Image (cartoon, rainbow, N blue to C red):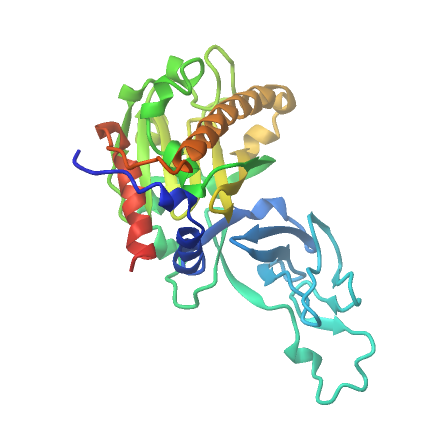
Length: 359
């Protein structure tokens, strides 16, 4: 390979990060979780996406919506965390909004001239569902999610992800730039060092290979025996019955641009959702998903702990590596490096970012 790495400022500069927010996160599709975590009308969760507070809620009509988490009175966040409600009541001045975002009640507005509640609902944000995943965009002209990710729908079809259940979400606050964790997730070079006592034992770098992608994603495939979601020697769940072709023989690691990684193996799927906070701060949400039939099995509570242990162990290894990398790149003496042939997808990811930030 002839390529160089991104300059250190791309990971440490507030100006570069601001351009990423403007040119990437405010324009592309952004992953925000799974639909089944809010199964009933009134179920909701909140998040902050690149500085934008959002509410994701299932309405009385069964539809999942995204709403700006900013009261139309004087801007307070309306709700925090996650839960269930019949309506949203702003804690500042008690304006009340329906599950569809419509303004339902106000205080002391009877003397306000030409005030029409119909014009002051929570601002809607475009949301679409794909394979049970939820995505939002602030760009009205962005192509539908199904077109955005191109041939990935066909590539992942036999996993039947829309019939999976997210059984655990775990949040980590990471002291690194969002791209560092993305890049780490999509290269096999670090497996022999960072994961030498875990993944390396059954899936060394030679088992991984990049795949052609026809959509806004990149892919790494690893052919190996057993499940990539377990540590060596652990017994797991039965294989997903519908798997066919390459999914039946190994694991796909999929980078959904701009900031989410999927791990799709023979018995489950997991995701790494990255929510940028600043040039050197990222919130990582790990979600573990299993087929509905597996979750309903009598031994699920016991056996699933082995998967959770594997994920927590390797995530801890990756966080330590990424924070160490951030510290080095933040040095005034840091300089650009060169890629090995095992980092081709990192180069691809970096070019995807540059195409947008510098456009």
